[in-house]
Amino acid sequence: MTEQGYDVVVLGAGSGGYAAALRAAELGLTVALIESDKVGGTCLHRGCIPTKALLHAAEVADTVREGSALGVNATLDGIDVAKINSYKDGVVSRLYRGLTGLVGGRDIEVIHGWGRLVGPDTVEVDGRRVTGKNIVLATGSYARSLPGLEIDGRVITSDQALAMDWVPAKAVVLGGGVIGVEFASAWRSLGADVTIVEALPHLVPNEEEALSKGLERAFRKRGIGYELGTRFESVTQSAEGVVVTLEGGKQLEAEVLLVAVGRGPATANLGYEEQGLTMDHGFVVVDERLRTGVGQIYAVGDITPGLQLAHRGFAHGIFVAEQIAGLEPAPVLDPSIPRVTYCEPQVASVGLTETQARELHGDDVETLEYNLGGNGKSQILGTAGFVKLVRAKNGPIVGVHMLGARMGEQIGEGQLIVSWEAFPEDVAGLIHAHPTQNESIGEAALALAGKPLHSHA
Picture 1 (cartoon, rainbow, N blue to C red):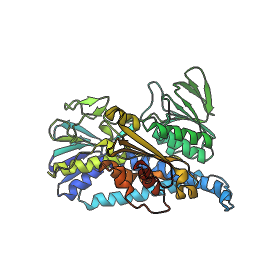
Picture 2: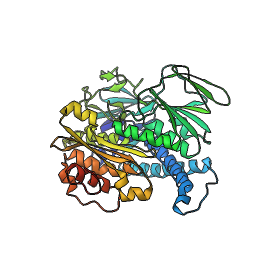
Picture 3: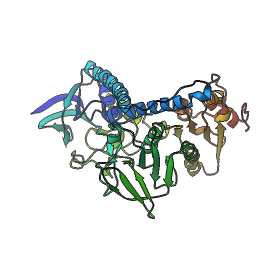
Picture 4: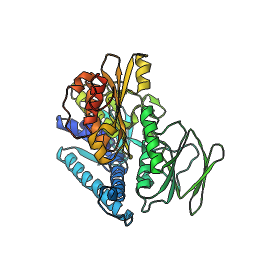
């Protein structure tokens, strides 16, 4: 059976896919949204939302432990994982109901089933052929492993970790990127003894090196262990736990091994190569307008090279819908997309690192670090950290990098600064409310503009 008449057929209902569908329908286009699982994808059901709910529960546990230092005498009687999971699942369920209501209210046809690209304008879903003037590929990502490392039993990925009904007494986390440090942080707060194994020299290695070093100091203070610049060699497991062997022979014993080595593009066996799409290590290659070069086929989100972030997927989906509708939107540029790692303390950044800025501008780069020790609200919260600004010499700010509790909430202003190419003097002229952590961005800009208030230039 072949159906005609859709303006847009979207394959995949994760962040990028449902954003494309919602915006396209809003613009008056007819839309079919194809999904083999639940609308919302990895972020809502197995990623961003449940992990951040887990991290919030972990933050509350830390707050209870630290209460007596503030004169609030409280004791932590234990961790009820069943109740944490119930809270986490409740957040997901409420958001899912809201999302399905939005999709239903926009007259989008949701087709449940496994879709495969079988032509430049056709997706086949369990024997049913759905055609559209435009095709948007948004099939998302999956939790990767290392070659030869089988996910089974006590060797798990974030998918299985989120479904656990117990907190491991000891855990080894393979990978010191975003997923690895977030789970290490949460498990430590919930009482686990955690060691991270990272082959590269630093935790969160894609971030500004100063942030990585600061996070390593904070984790060391929290009792989170790490082996940096060390490669994983093998793992053996029994009914009781795992033994992880590292390059050089060192062994780590634990109850579980969490494999957090990143996410791969979910593009295998979906007909992409057969239809002539250009692929690169599983990613769909697109131009700056997210066109694949085959017919009217676009690709968005995690299956395209670059940052794998839900909010990048949202932006891609909106962009493609507006592109199809003829609105000529501005391209989505990765350097202007904010990044947050929600461990404790949080890592937040946007724009170029100092190293990237020097590669672009040579030695004509200026940086400034403002220590949160001078920020009143950060002292109230008891968090250490800093704000680092990177600018082209005598030019605009090209990078904003922050470390500290709750600093992810401040990165929105950082995005405006970088995207609008603001000079330090522009930001210094804005009035930031006192006492807030947001004030630290203003203080950093004041210092970089040569007129520090609560810091030394």
